[in-house]
Image 1 (tube, rainbow, N blue to C red):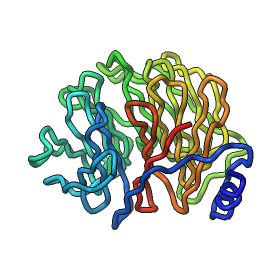
Image 2 (cartoon, rainbow, N blue to C red; image 1 turned 90 degrees about the vertical axis):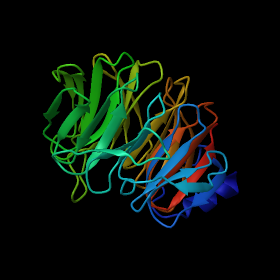
Image 3 (cartoon, rainbow, N blue to C red; image 1 turned 135 degrees about the horizontal axis):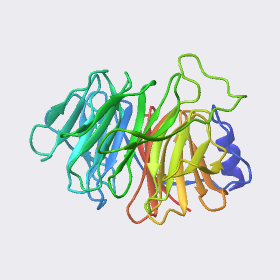
Image 4 (cartoon, one colour; image 1 turned 90 degrees about the horizontal axis):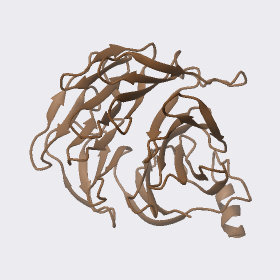
Length: 316
């Protein structure tokens, strides 16, 4: 283990702690292009991977590519399955493509602000919420819509489907809870450290990802400065800060909510004990990681990003 940590420390952009065990990578699939979105079905039997050129169906165990999905324009910054099996993928340039049948062409929803970053299915799988780079958000079909001050980076729903959570970047860089029926703001939370130094082209401290814990109690907010803030989903109150990451992009809970996995634009992947804040494992790849998801059995995680690989990791 010590030798492995020494080798990992030689990689560029590394921020690994010497006393934190490394992840074990158990499978890897290389693609010709950057991997911009990954979606795993609720039963773990269907894996979809989107690049800026295409959206493909993969074997979730071996990661082998099986075939391309018809229609669409490639995978943008988001992909998600509903509980009923419908697939939504953000377009490369604009809008959202929705496959009800993975063997047929998708339906397209446009968005007035251009490129979509955040999208999420309601718990019953009947409504899709999405937001774009212009701050516009909407719920389809027939739901509310509105515009926030910053670009909408991520979206997720409460378990009862009554609350929609959105996060923003640029000069807003905050987390919102909205009434999913009316669009009314229930609460807004912003947490920007006075010591934070923004990167050129970035916002105050962009909230890149939002993930609701499986029990619906916690909201994991992935911040550009590397922190993951665990908030009370009902009130937005800050409960715990998970430190150790850099440029954190996305997070995923294990099914029992005891662990949280996060990836960042520095190429790091980390897992924490959500109840104690202890970092349990870490790993580093050479280029940016943008997406992570945990398998339904809670035993493994899948990551993807600019390094053109989809990787399977064994959780501690």
